[in-house]
Image (cartoon, rainbow, N blue to C red; front, top):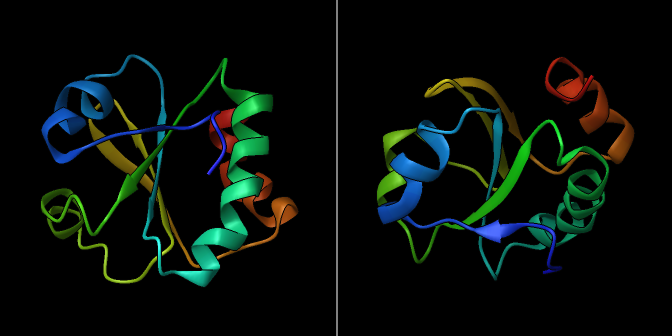
Amino acid sequence: MGDKMNAVTDAEFDATVLKSDKPVLVDFWAEWCGPCRQVSPILEELAGEHSDKVTFLKMNVDENPVTPSTYRVTGIPTINVYVNGELAKSIVGAKPKAALLRELADFTG
């Protein structure tokens, strides 16, 4: 994993994500997940390009089981965007950069 996306834990989720004053993208991932490793560098790139508008975070679902179950994250990678404490968008599965940009245009544009 690169260094443009900080990790967030169950304990920090409420304060870091739900109380943020800008949209927060959370990448739910795990070490053993191949598609997660595919999408990770794309999200790192997007974080570098759009971190002024969106906060990019990642959460290891093996180390933090509470939040994924709260938001019914059943498959990974799942990329959720939270706005004003609410789940605004959920993208399941690894997607190419162009597709992710389209999905996230409401938040990055």
